[in-house]
Image (cartoon, rainbow, N blue to C red; front, side):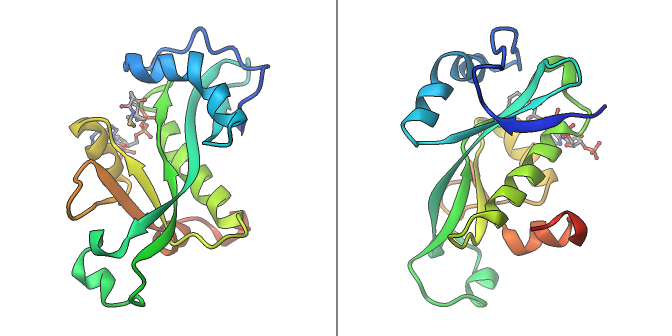
Amino acid sequence: MSFRIEALSAAHDRQGFVCGSEPLDRYIRTQATQDVKRRISNVFVARDVDGAMAGFYTLAATSLPLTELPPEEIKRLPRYGLLPAALIGRLAINRRFQGQGLGGALIIDAALRAARSEPAIFALIVDAKDDKAVAFYEHYGFRRFISRPDSLFLPMATVLKAIPAASQP
Ligand SMILES: CC(C)(COP(=O)(O)OP(=O)(O)OC[C@H]1O[C@@H](n2cnc3c(N)ncnc32)[C@H](O)[C@@H]1OP(=O)(O)O)[C@@H](O)C(=O)NCCC(=O)NCCS
């Protein structure tokens, strides 16, 4: 199935969005537009060919404390306290589109947008809402922070290696 991924706008019908997590459904219906207006998060939406909202994610700037990385990663990096990162704060797929790889496609879309940003981004960060979400992100190569196991990171260099050069900025 083909999807179009675009910035959230008034054209998106979010009332029919059901992903299995009530807080995420409520977020897209009632909060997402405000977050975009206040420049707290950008929100990107996947629509199917009929225009239905199949999924969404939020993307914002954040920082990654160097001490949250495993020792073998730290060894390769300069001793800066904080590294620049992009946060996927929320990610959800409409129930009827789950299990088709769309969650993974949204992670790749987020990585490409982060790679195009002019400020440098060292890693993607996600906040997982439960153990199932942690397992989903680990499936895509994310690794847990040392002291906050519900937050995970994936270096941009790693994710970009998995994306064909022709699709990259
Ligand atoms: C979690 C969620 C985003 C996954 O999206 P999805 O589009 O259904 O997932 P995908 O189809 O991209 O999954 C791709 C792969 O991840 C694996 N996967 C999915 N959920 C998984 C889980 N809980 N544990 C381990 N692997 C998982 C799939 O088996 C699949 O593997 P494959 O490609 O080898 O077959 C979606 O189910 C959802 O919106 N759930 C409710 C909200 C939520 O939990 N959000 C999480 C962010 S806080």
